[in-house]
Amino acid sequence: MNAPTSTDTLARLAAVIDSRKPAAGGDPEKSYVARLLHKGPDAFLKKIGEEATETVMAAKDAELAGGDPQKLVNEVADLWFHSMIALAHFNLSPLDVVAELARREGLSGLEEKALRKVREREVQGD
Image (spheres, rainbow, N blue to C red):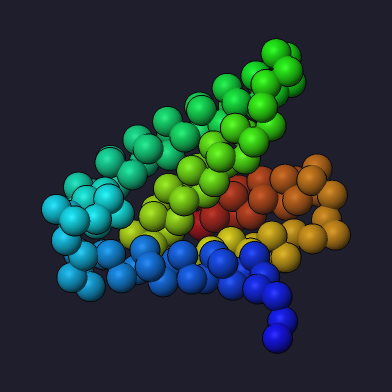
């Protein structure tokens, strides 16, 4: 038997999140995910902002104060989780993000950023 991959784990978690959508019968009284989705984008976007800030703080602590690197892992996991809720709200999945990362693979970060700016200008010019 093959070991599970990170995409397997993300796909399983995405399926659980999808099952918690109000349209799928998710109960906001019984599920944190259902509650966030029921409240709408402002609720989960606020959580993403909070988790992003906590991720930055954990990284700073690990770098400057000899903090526990596991705290950074924990905060990134929270950030990813809440980002997955946002993806689910827009009927997207972690596999969409993985596909985008794969598309960028082999491009330098500077090159990829320049290409995005060109595409944005093309869209605005329409």
